[in-house]
Length: 306
Image 1 (tube, one colour):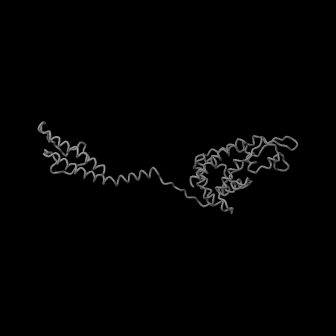
Image 2 (tube, rainbow, N blue to C red):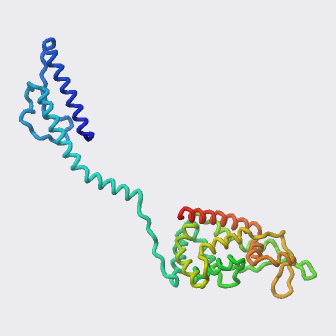
Image 3 (cartoon, rainbow, N blue to C red):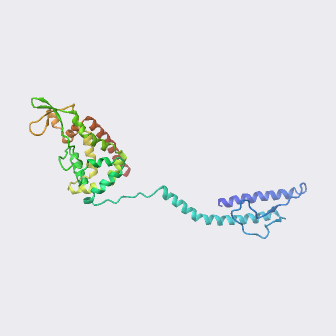
């Protein structure tokens, strides 16, 4: 029995009990007549007219009440059936509004990806300032090559996806062919590190996932086997996070056009480690802190996917 029928059955029971009570106590009470009309306060719909229902004295209240309740019950079922389909449509529309289907952006070909990357980067929160530090073409390919090099502890000297600072490193001459790095040289990288670390971890991870098919395609072009780009990327991050430090400032020598670290132990550092030394301790710490959060989020996403 549905809820409507249960309610109407309860109403019938009350009316029957009331009628029996009136019959039993009729000799002791003044006769009571029940008048039922078809007038409903604040009427919203009209019931079908019935021959024994309108404006007349009911001689058998129990029988008449049963007939009225039966007709109301039939009418309620019709109303429920009429409202069921529109109500289902409203529920379906509401669910669609609350849980929209995710829209997967259509990626361009790798050869035509530069404008897409720049437009998407400009659209994300904190991404626009990075555009001033990017090269004009082959962004995805150059990024992948740079990451592959960093994963091996190397750092490419050319064909980088970002522009290297135009300012040259400044030093203080100590005499006897020894030099000391001027700590003002670290400021050459301040702006680049700032714009990179200003992007939130969530935004950076989402952008990485969005471009990942292009990264994989570009990495496949390198012809390397037994690895995928995501693993290479995580290894590159680890190499930055685990980079060795050195006392500041470092002494240099210049046996030729290039400066070398005077301490052979520091000169034996990987190219990535020596690059981080040139960034300066504060810039290096900021970059490592952001990469640590980035790595944790990538690992969490990977574990959830599995």
